[in-house]
Amino acid sequence: MNDRQEAGYGGTVKPTRGKVVLASNNAGKLREFAAMLAAAGIELIAQGTLNVPEAEEPHQTFVENALAKARHAARLTGLPALADDSGLCVRALHGAPGVYSARYAQLAGGEKSDAANNARLVAQLADVADRRAYYFCVLVLVRAADDPEPLIAEGRWQGEIVDAPRGAHGFGYDPHFYVPALNATAAELEPSVKNRTSHRAIALRQLLARLEEDA
Ligand code: IMP
Image (cartoon, rainbow, N blue to C red; front, top):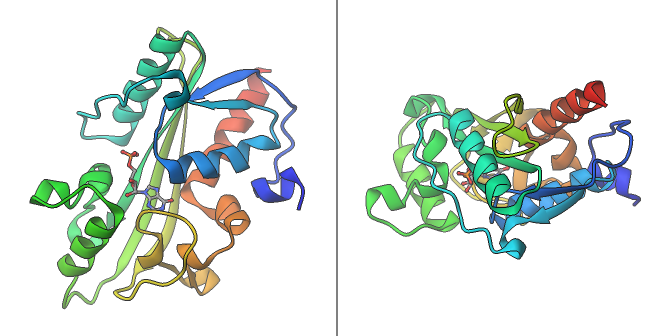
C-alpha cells in the first residue's frame, strides 16, 4: 500500500508546507494523522518530541479547546501547529461525553483510560434503546500563536453504540462505535478505511482543501 492509499483521504494536495507541530500526545490520534498527512507532504512533529506539555482544555466547546491547544503548541515551538479536539456525542446522553470524552470516567471518580471510559459509556446506556451517536472533530491550524486567521475545519461521523466491544484497531471508543453503513465497529475497520471515513478524515479533507486555496 502506498502513502496515498494508507492516508485514505484521496486528496490532491500539493506537497509540503514544511514542519507542523501536532498539538496532541494522544497516540491514537498521532497514528491517524501521521498516516493521513504523509501523502500531503506535511512533516508532522508530535509536540511531545519537542517537550511541549499538554495544554489545558478548560472550554465547553470543541473549537475553543482546539484553538487553545494549537496556540499553546505554536507559542512554545515557534512552528505552525495543528490541533484536534474531538469526542463522542451520544444522543440519549444529550451529547455526552462530548468535549469530556477523554476524561469521561475520570469525571465520575474513575481512572483516565479508554477501558474506564468505555465501561462508563456502556453503563450509562444500560436499558437505553436509542443508540445513535456521532464522533465530532474540530481541527485548527495556526501558522503562529498570534495568527489572526486560524484555519478551522470540522467533521462528523454517524454511528451507534454497541454494548459488546468488537475489533482491535483504532483507539478510544472505537470498539463500541458501530457504523451501520460499513457493518463494522470503527475498531474493526482497517486503518486505511477509518482514515478516509472518520470525523477526523472529513475534517482533514476540509482543512487541506482550505490550505490548497491559500497556496
Ligand atoms: P481530546 O484529546 O480532548 O480531543 O479527546 C478526544 C477523546 O475523544 C479521545 O480521548 C477519545 O476518548 C475520543 N475520540 C476522539 N476521536 C476518536 C476516535 O476516532 N476514536 C475513538 N475515540 C475517539
